[in-house]
Length: 155
Image (cartoon, rainbow, N blue to C red):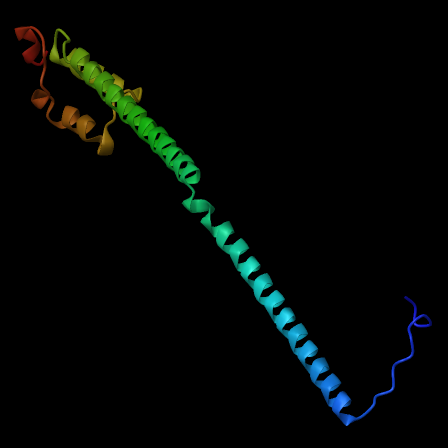
């Protein structure tokens, strides 16, 4: 309806009708304000529920299972890498030990000491602080030999 189609307002008969209308209008405004307040409360509750749901994805069983699997996989990778590193170090020590044994199996002490110095010079044997080199230079008779009885004498 357009404003032209509305009937003109009826004249008020007396003050009692005016008071009744004002009271009805006040009640209608109060109902409207209650409805607006209820709407705001519901909007707030909805927003809070969305925030709660966003934070609760961590508590879902599937999420927990996936995170647990990822952590277990990472732990396995780290453990495997560490074991491979330790195995490589052990094998390197075995090689160095076998080189020393081969060096001291020489037929005489001079050859054995020469072999040890060769392995040190080539970097195949570690000699931190040149301790072994100094021992060979200062006290060659203290370097143990493994071989024939004649190998125990310095020739």
